[in-house]
Image 1 (cartoon, rainbow, N blue to C red):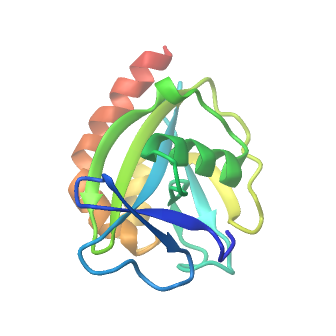
Image 2: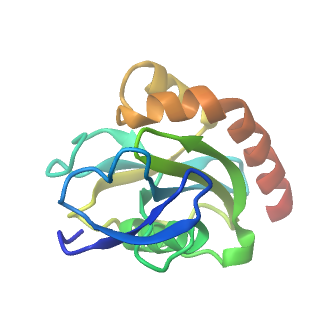
Image 3: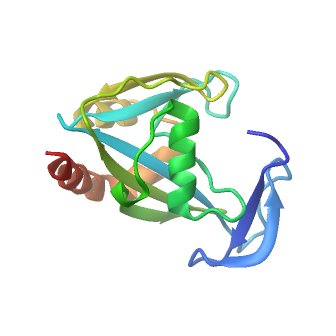
Length: 177
């Protein structure tokens, strides 16, 4: 997560404008956005992988699904796959990702993806990004969210995407059977 990381600036539809934004230079300009993508991995048993943010990050020691900003030239799908691999060491094929939905945030377009995985593979978290990761039920995700244990941006994301997430987790789990 270097400060020289570059993001494509997009319009509200997610179309790159041709402008770039350097991470660490503050928020993108008002009315502009960058893509943030996340993956909810779904085990064959229906549990999902959550990660605990490292103590050195914003929203320290808060839960989330593996997520991060798409880099210059990356699509939401490509960025989601890269972040998943960087943060957990786990990989899925691009065509396995199913879009749960998009949340339009103040300066970001947040895309949540779901993907099936065989069994419950052991993640190998990047200690600079993730302190811990574990497989839990969606009921446990909801319990932690409602108890304020997820990173703050997830509140609005879950408010908008929770029902779709439940449906996609069931759909994706069925693909893995």
